[in-house]
Every structure is written in structure tokens, then in C-alpha cells.
Amino acid sequence: MPPHRRLVLLVALLLSLAGGAQLTARAAPSTLTDLEIQVSDGSVLRADAHLPGPGRHPVVVTITPYSKNKQTSTSGRAIDPVFPAHGYVQLVVDARGTGASEGVWCQFCRREQRDAGEIVRWAARQPWSNGAVVMYGASYGAISGLFAAQQPGTGALKAVFAIVPMGDAYRDIFSSGGNPNLQFLTVWGVGLVTPEQVVGAAAASPNNPRVSLNATTQHLLQGAPDLAGKLAVMAGGGTVGTLPVGDGSFGVHDGPFYRERSPLVSAHRITVPTFLVGGQFDIFQRSQPALYDALRLPPSRKKLVHTPGYHQTTGAFLSAEDGSRTVRDDRGQVLPAQNLLAVQWFDRWARGSRNGIEALPTVEMFWQGADRFVAQRSAHPPARTLALALDASPSGTSAHARLDGSLSRSRRTPGQAELPFLPVTGSCGRNTTQYLFGAVPDNPCSEDNRANEVTAAVFTSAPVRTETLLTGSGNLRLWVRSTRPETNVVAHLSDVAPDGSSRQLTYGALLASQRASTARRCERPVALDCTRYAPDGTVQQVFHPFSARSARALDPDRVYALDLELLPTTVALQPGHRLRLAVSTGDFPNSPPTAHLLGTAAGGVTTILFDRTHPSALRLSQVRGWSAVRGR
Image 1 (cartoon, rainbow, N blue to C red):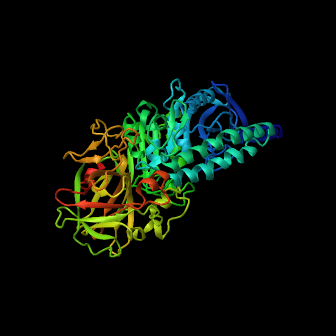
Image 2: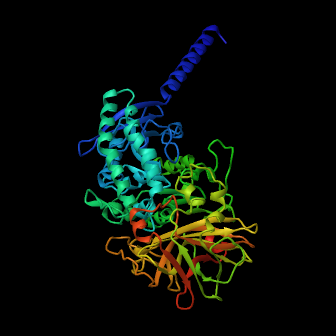
Image 3: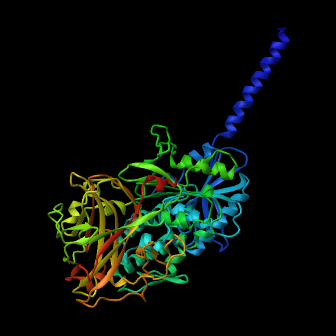
């Protein structure tokens, strides 16, 4: 080759390498901090945008009250480098009244919901946006995403990926069967959010001291007293009134305050593809299958992956992001890591990629006992009612219980069980771990419920002979009388292994004064202001209004029927295993005694009756084999 030709080629090669180096430099991720989003009431919300490089890209929006500067939230990474690595901008926004954002934090109020819609519209207009926006987040961020999808004028929103979202604010967060759930609210509000509002706000905007000072002052004067007032109302249990908030009021009864903050109320309005990830021991375990049912979307545009995890650990049961662990369902389908699932979901709906994610089974449900994910066509496979009567015949399996009775298909021995009011029992059980978000690892208490059964009336079935498939919500009908005008009844359902260990599957609770139920039959699968009935006419999922109007004190020594909703579970009970129901009057610290409960129930004795006149019974949904589960 002539020398001049070699020179030309060398120059061309050098220019090419230089151009490649420049391209690589331009493509390096970068972050824009403290972007100001002025919303329609004049407040300024602040956000950080994590860019994959120059140009216009789809935008992943995450709204958090835990500070946009933090790498983690209560349920995962608020700032996730996987999105810029796949060519997405991730916009992390401080919710109003938290972090560096102005306004008063109002926990999903309508003003905050409007903020979510305005953030979507703002993101679509930015010079680094290609106009396509998706919502991503866990817990608070997941709920914000669902609310954003319900806002008008958000045509730029293409998809939602919601990890452990709430559906019903009252039943998921604020109460357990009508009794305030102070454990969750205290840990969440005082332990997580308030430090961020008051202390963390000082560092909310590292490059702008004025913003940090303003945020700290505003949150100190407004946010902390608001939360303290709410905790005081709940600790009183109705004895200290309510706090007026917007068009409703915060108190111990369900009403406008909670309905305004419940995505389940208007989930049917969501029209964008929505992917839900839930946990069978999540604090919101009741609502995630219900949210899936409420979405009026075709199977290709809605998905549910339900793991056996707690609030913070759902992702631990899916494949590892680094490839070190691969999880497959019963069909051999790989279940990627949560954030990689999100990337695939967004690629399909924000970029039009034909990656086949819409063909993923509509529901991936983890079955305890079988210990595997099963691909299902729905969250509720066809089932029949399994009715088990409470029976005084001794089961001989829980000798330390107050009553060691049986669960049987036909009652043989009538009887009754007396339970003194013991509100501070129940701490050595799964609920303590569950309502601490799973931040505390599983331990002997969460894995074996026998310590709680010492002070309970316990009813245990005979060992099952064949694999028994149980799924969905259950109903416990108890006939009770009390020597006091109030009592709190708590029921734990467990899988008892041949070695005697008792692993909690689910639970239910009911404040007896809130025993009134809604008789209206549900026309759709979602139990909202209606009660779901089984084909045989028995109650399958009771709905209690939990209102001030429906509250009725007990007449001492009169017998009442109580229906307790057992939160949904999914279990394949293995041959040789038993079902166990443990009924008590305490669930501490999940539901510590309020001033109301101490004043009306202390010193009382609750008697559970089970005979022909008072047929106390447990009803569960039993599926006829795996073919029915899979819809084949």
C-alpha cells in the first residue's frame, strides 16, 4: 500500500477513535439536582433527574417522602442505576412537604394526587424527555404511581410498575379489624418519615442551603405536629375525637379521609398497563390481589407477581439482578429481578419493544407448602368452600393452650372456650415481624406460632391425607359473649407440620363493637362496600363498614355472631400436615390497647360458643387440584 494511503487510513482511524471517545464521554450518566416543579397551587416540588446521557429518553418517575437524595426507600432502591443503564431518565421527586419540596405533607391527599399528574405532564415536556413517562416505585412510590394513573390529562403516562402498593388505606394501614394499628404507624411515621421531615430536610438540598433551611423550618412547624396529633387520636381509640383534614376527618373510623387515600376506590379508572408485585406477608397483603382484580385491563396489560415476602423482601424471592440466582415458575418461565422486570415492562409499553413481556402469565402466585411459583390465569381460581366446625374434641396437639379443641367437617362435641382479656399477648408471632416491614429477619417467633397459642383457644384439624390447595380470603364465624361492653378477637391460622411446629399462614381481627357487616352482595371480585359470598351462600369475604354509625357496644352476657375476615393466603397443605386456628384477645404490638379498649374491655372475659345453636366455624376456599389453579 502506498505511504500516502497508509497515512490517510491512520488519520481516519484516529478520527474514528476520537469520535468514539467523545461519544462515550457524552453518554456518561449525569444528574441534574434540585429541579423545580411548580404545581398548580403555587408550591414548588424539587426533583433530581438521573440521565443516561444526552438526547431525549423515556422518563421513569419515582415520588418518595424519604428524600430524593437517599439511595434506598423502605422497600427497595429509590434511585436505581438500572434505569439510566437501559437508556431511561429516572426522575426522583420529593413528595410535597417532605425532603426539599414545599407544601404540607398530607399523605396521598387529593392535592398530592394532583401533584403526581402534574409531575407526569412536566416530565414529558423536559428537553431530556422524549415525551413518554412511566411510574415506578415501592410502597409510597407504588401508591403514588397508581394515583398518577388515575389523574386526567396524563396521556404521556405509558405504564406503571408498582411494588407492594396499598389498596385500602383504612384496612391496610390504620386498623386491624377496627382497632388502630399503632405498631405500623409509630414505626413508619416516627421512625422513618418524621426524621426525614425534620432532620433530613436540613440536607435535602446540599447545593442550596436556603432551600434546606426553608424545608426544615416548614416541616418542623407543620409535618411533625400533624403526625403527633394523628398518633394521639389513634392511641385514644375514639376517646380524643378526630382531626379535621380537607373534606374529611382523621379518626379511628373509616370515612372520607381514608377513602380519598385508597387507590382501590378508583383503580378501575386506570387505563395504562400496570404491573403489581406483592407479598403474602406484606403489610398490604389484603389489597394486592384486590387491586389486580379491580384493574379493568386485558391480561396482556395487567400482571401480578405475588411472593412469600414481607414489605421489604418481595424481591428476595425472584431472580437476582446479578444472575447469581435464577427463579422459575412451574412452567419453567424465568422470573427476573423486580427492577429488570420493570425495565422489560417499560420497554414494551414506552418503547414499543416486542419483547414478549405481555405473554408472561397474568398471575405468578407463590404457593406455600409447594414452595414454588405457579403460573395462573387469575388471582382467584375456581374453588369450593371448605367448612370446618369448631369442636371441643381434644386434638392432643397443643397441650399448653387454654382449650385444645379440633377443627372438623362435622361437629362431634359441643363446648365453649373462655378467654380473659389479655391485650398484650401475641408479640412472639409473625405479625410482629410483618408489621415491622420484614426489617427484622425471620426468627423462631415468626416461624413458629406455638408461643402465642399458650394464651389462646386452639382448634386443630386432623392431618390431611392428600395435598390440599387453599387460596384467597377466609371467614371465621364466631359466636361470642363478653362480660364487658367491648372485646377484641384475634385469629391466627397456621400450618402445623408433623414435628409440631406451627407456621402462621394468615390472621384476622375484629373489634367486637364493629361487628356490623355490609349485606350487599359484591357484583365484582373486589370486596369494597359489599360482602363476597361463596356459591353455597355462606360469607366468603366479609366487609365491615367500621364507621361511627355502625359501632354498637356489647350487652354483657348476650351472645353475638362475629365474622372475622382472614387475610388472603395461598397454601398447598402437604399430606400429614394440619390446619390450626388459634383465637385470642391480643395482638401486641401490632394492635396495642387503646384508651377506648382499656376503658371498655379491661377485666372482661370473652366466651366462644360452638354447638348446634351457635355453630362457630371456619370457612376457606379450596381449589380442586392444580389444573384448576392453572386454568387448564
